[in-house]
Length: 199
Image (tube, rainbow, N blue to C red; front, side, top):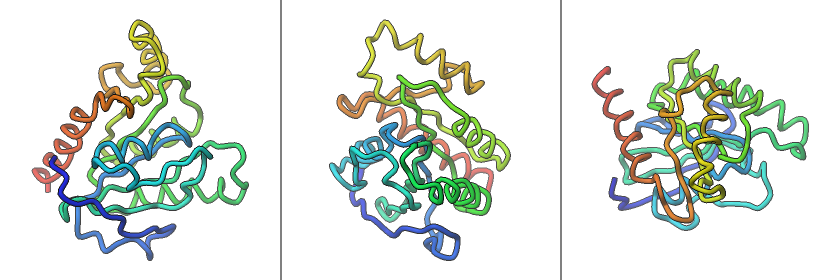
């Protein structure tokens, strides 16, 4: 997709604050510090559309971004960071689950894993929700530049085994080299197209 414009729309915590839903949405989900913000910034070719932070757990709202007036990218709150207040941790689950369950314009979720980290309970729970609500899922493994090429298959295999997904289901991505960005866009566009055909 050629990016003409990319603008922040608004933040929300509950359905009453969501944008009207006039554009199809692709959401991005994953643990704190998996490189979610960096992935979105690379995809839309902007250095700081989504603010990146060295402090995990900063994204505690659902953030909506308008791309080309054709598509909305949605940055879901990162989860699993120990130093986030308990009240925020408790709010995360209902906030994400409600969005996934009721958002009619949601066409897919880019679910992000760090190649160096083994998926944990929250990751599996989110996968279960995506399956429960029938949300098409695009699994992406980030930070592939952090391990040697010879070690990639091993790390991907561990993540695949823990999640129950096929190793072939994952797109591999590096924010520093932009490797994988074209493939991820192709999968996003396929999710948008297939949803349109069904509707």
